[in-house]
Length: 50
Image 1 (cartoon, helix red, strand yellow):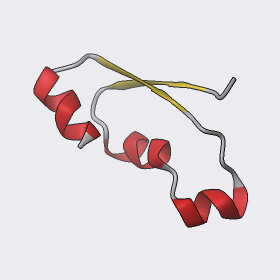
Image 2: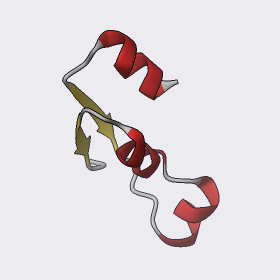
Image 3: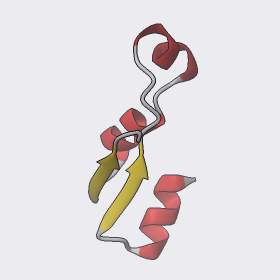
């Protein structure tokens, strides 16, 4: 959904926040930002938690 919206808007930059899950918790829940980084064709700015 996120990737299709970025494409529809023809965005030059996407800004997304990171929750900060690491280790086993990140692997079990899945890391959305990591998936977006691999698939997104535009520039991406990731903001760390806090």
